[in-house]
Length: 332
Image 1 (tube, helix red, strand yellow):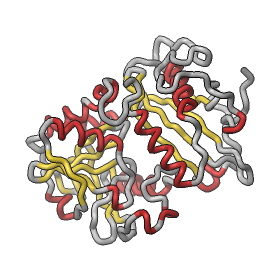
Image 2 (spheres, rainbow, N blue to C red):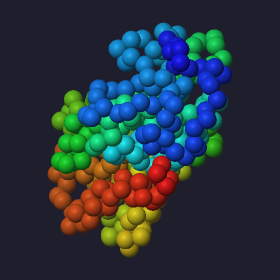
Image 3 (cartoon, rainbow, N blue to C red):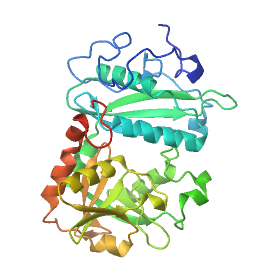
């Protein structure tokens, strides 16, 4: 197969003949190769299933993802070769693409390229995948799409193990229902992450690791790359997506598992006062899974007596997805 010099445009990709729903290494034998014995460096796979050289240019300089952050993406954990909650991530990617008016590739294309990338990167231990869709070159009419596979960063593993220090930062917004202003793309996972990254840098420049966004009235929203979970009065609480925040796949999976274990779980509108008074606070995301907030605005957060139970629920999420649990595990 001839390799192009950029991600395959959607109208130039070959029609997929792979099994829909078979997103595991080896499911598409005509496009994948035997994985190496050990995990390699990061992998880039075009949506036609070809592996690209990550050290060489791939996107055009006038791609609107680079010029304007005009695109969407998903990031998900890969555990021993199995993408965690893949169906849910593909669903959210499709919703984000629709919000931006992008033509989302067929799910089978994403599955094939993801399987090829996992096979090349290695199927032992953890890695993480990013599924990226851009509007493509300026003035053009063809989106670009590709898959990245990388090792889970050491900083992510430390956050799981040791927890994080968090600062509350205003997002400078007033809470309003997303349907009142759909052009703001609230709840879509877009490539426009400059504000999120600036908030993280601010936190790290001020003796913290992470930020937690607040609305102007003190309503708790989300972290730059994570959902917020509170333990209060024996209940697990999280800000409602109706506030215009990104619906968290990991949080939804945790709520389902916790409910089965007897916990009362609720989405609610929470104040910064409730955040600071909570018995425990965690940040949840697809790759980091769960990180306990060990200090908030410089004030230590003592461990909760339920820390071990929450940690066990979080640790079990990848295995639950692989077994066909909540969130649509790819191996169901």
